[in-house]
Each structure stands twice: as C-alpha cells, then as structure tokens.
Length: 330
Ligand SMILES: [Zn+2]
Image 1 (tube, rainbow, N blue to C red):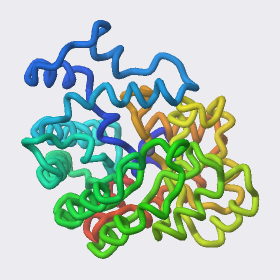
Image 2: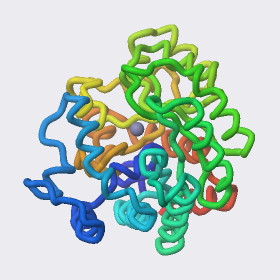
Image 3: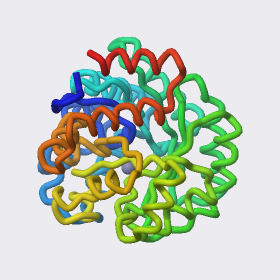
C-alpha cells in the first residue's frame, strides 16, 4: 500500500500533546471547566505561520490544561490511534511527558497508565499496533525524570514501549544529567530514543548516544552541518526519526525542500518518519510521506527501505511487528 504512494507507513515520532483534536479540546474544556480560548480551540491549537519555535511550543502547550485529568489523557491517546488508523498508518508510537500532566490528585503512575490504556484500547479497536513512549523532559530535575522512568518501567510491556527525552534543547542541551533515568528505562526493556540536534548542534547526537545509550535520534536536523558526524551516524547504524513539516514550523529548516532527509539518505543514514505534532502543523504521517516523495525526491525503492528500517527500529513485539508488516503490505 505504501511503496510508491502517499500512504502512511509507520509513525515513529508523534506526540500525544500534539494530537488533541480541536473538537475533543472543546469537549474536555467543558467537562473540566477550562476557559475556551477567545479565538476557539481550532485556532488555539493550530499554528498560523512557520519558523517560530516559541510560538510552536506555546501552541502545543495550549492543550496542557486539558490533560490534567487521566480520563482526558486516555481519550486523547485512544483518539490518536483511531486517527492514525484512518490516516493509513501501520503503527503509532505515541510519546508524551507525563510529569507535565500530574496533579495533587493524579500521580505519575496513574497518568502513564491512562495513556497506556488509551493506546491499548485504540489498538484493539483499529487493529493498528500502538505504544506509548514516555518522555523525560529537559527542564525537569534529575529526580523528577528518574521518577518518570520508574513509572514508565512499571508499565513496560503493558502499553508502554519506549523512553524519550524531549523539551527545549536550546536551553538544556546536555545529556549526561539524564543518564540515570535512561538506565532505569533500559533495565526495564524499554526502547530508547532522544530528541537531539533538533535545536542544538550536530554534537548533540554523539552526546546522546554516549550518555543515554540511544540508537534512535529524534529529528537530528542539525547533523547535516557536520559530514563526519553524519558518517559516524551511518557507520553506527543510528536511526534518525525525521519530521520534515515540523522542522519548518519550528524554524529548524527554512523550507521543506531544505530538509536534510535526502542528504542523510545519501550519507547512508537510516531514516524513519514521524508527524511530531500533527494538530499544530496540519500534516499527518501520510502528508509527511507525500513530502518525501513529491518534494524531496524519494523514490519508491527508498520509501520501501524507509518502511523496512521503521519496522526494524520500531518498539514492537514480534507479533505486533508481523501485524504492522501485514498492514504495510496492504
Ligand atoms: Zn518530537
């Protein structure tokens, strides 16, 4: 189904916080007594113009008041899988930062369980394998992130499949402080990934590999600035999760045609695809795939290779991998 078309493939980089449907936001706001933004939820959640990281992060954060309730987290996780299935995706890895959504009433374990339950229910309803990737956040202290890792570890194999580091890389670029949290996640058998070189320079990739033990890199856009770092990434078989439209909206690249995906591929780097925050950017995975084909010159064979790398790199059990492969084959 996806070999030479704009069909969807596997989504290995997408955020729960970036998948709150505007209609769901309105319903949750009513339920939770949260104020309606003056311009309405569609305008509050959808970005107006690209190139502004601060506006991008603020737009994603517009949904945070609505996620301070585990039932809301569960609903958004469920709907994300339903939307992924409708988009033709063969697998959804849904990442989120639970520490942002805890309250005095609802702790980390409960919030993580809610998201895991939502994707399990979504997967059961659609037949599309899905898992939660729990994200530590750069602006949180080490103790908080280790508690996040323990909550993720407790739900490993029960809807939680991976562990990530997200947040403002330009302000908190170092990786060493997060090593203990990643050790906890690794010991629980979770897959590891890390946002790196999205806002910081190319050295962030090697830093993440060395300190956190990751083999998958979120975005990695600035890797393109250092040919030797690209060669090392290729030699080591690192997998870069690319999200072209998101990189335009955050200002990491000026135009989608300037995205380094083609350069990465030509350098021998393994690539997988994600839609990052599709409600904010208006582009789901199928749209990202069309961009690869129509604007970045990916051939049918290159898209097939992307699918194969995604199947191998995805945080899936053996049986889920077979299901995703069958969905890919159409
Ligand atoms: Zn991301």
